[in-house]
Amino acid sequence: MNPTTNTKAKSKKTATPSTASLEEFNSGVLYALVSLHGMPKLVAQELVVADREFLASRFERGDLSVLEAADELSVKPGTAAGWVQIDEDALVLNFDGEVERLLKQALDTGLFGANRREVVDAMVRRGVEAVLPVLSACTGNRSGRVSNWQ
Image 1 (cartoon, rainbow, N blue to C red):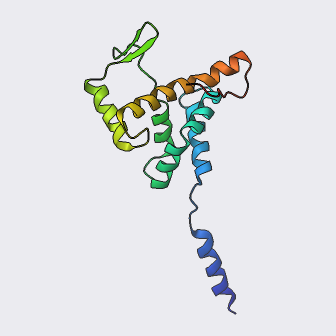
Image 2 (image 1 turned 90 degrees about the vertical axis):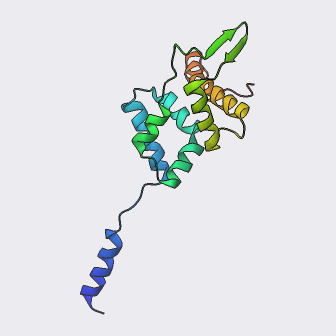
Image 3 (image 1 turned 180 degrees about the horizontal axis):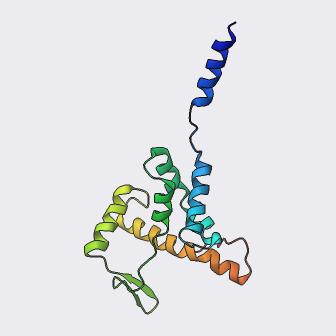
């Protein structure tokens, strides 16, 4: 066997660039959320776990970088949103214009539900669930999980 041929074969194998795993991708998103977006680590961890299906699907498609994923997950809700109102003990959501367009876009992705009601329900729950780990940590429930809330 020619030693030169063997060396070339080995170098071809090691020259192939490796790709990140989903776990590495998620770790990068977590790092970006904490370091670049200033999100508390506990909240960022819960957000990555809550959005694991979204992150996995975008990772598999390869159309979203780590930084773009962190940007997507770190969008903060508007505090002066006129389309959200509290009426007695009910939350009233009025969709029109830009909010309606974004709601339709979320529905079209299929990630949040199969119909408008499911999409709105998923989005409201996601928003509430993103805050619960912080509240749980403050009250002593270190698991950060809230079970069976409706």
